[in-house]
Length: 364
Image 1 (cartoon, one colour):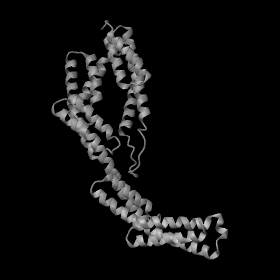
Image 2: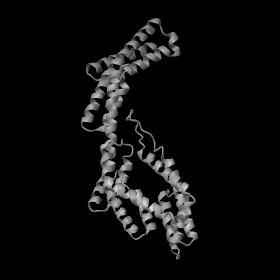
Image 3: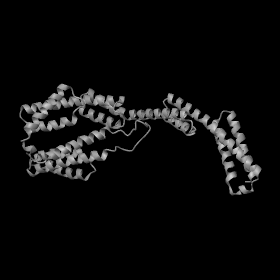
Image 4: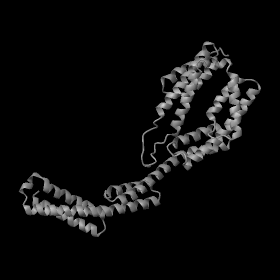
């Protein structure tokens, strides 16, 4: 294409942009101006520019400057239009469409227009949070409703499972988020019923001096303990815990543990700390609500803590198996399995031992 033809074609796109502007079609104007700019830049930078007359070069430079100035104005109008469209989509709760519109508005806004950039960013972040909450609400609602139904019919164990699943879905929400507060409250309600049942069972075992049975029930109660206890229940639990710990120290079941009490204490402490970090981890940066990260950064620490505790259960079970106390061995193997991933080698090894202990005819 000859240089004069390129210049004339660019001028034609500029005229087209003018017509689009008169119609209020900022998008059309922007497209036409970008085409004109492309031609003018090529005219000024190609090697054949040496053959271009000074008059054509001067005219091309002037037109390019004019196009860039007009493009800036068109993009400003277009940014405002996208922002208004985003607000409209948001009013109809079309979250994804609103986010797309606000992102376009951000992209088209001049970098020096800090006030408008900040305004759009606030709208964009708010919309992303609303979309996240909406998507999360759709995912966790079935579990919460199922949990509510199970509580109504008195099936508290399954209710806890459903509500824990909902809490796992909502793990990245702030602790004071209304969804999380409600589900935690509901879960604690179910846990309290089961927890009190364990306390009653422990009390009956203590009355009959069955301290080993009481100890097993106390371990289960500790896993199901609600996050908040009434003072009376807390005192009752602590009193039972102290009584059992004092009396069980000489019991046969814990003989093998006494030599490694420090290991057990450290393993349980590591597990509780890892569980707390894993459960409270939030991938959402409070300063940048739209920020997303991949996965829970404490997952590997949590898995390692569980495996350490599982190995202690396995070792205890091995000791019982050597004494042909297979019921106790099976019970401890089962506790180890509950802590392990089904895909791990340790799980497969313990599972094999567990099946053997259960199948054995020798029971204590």
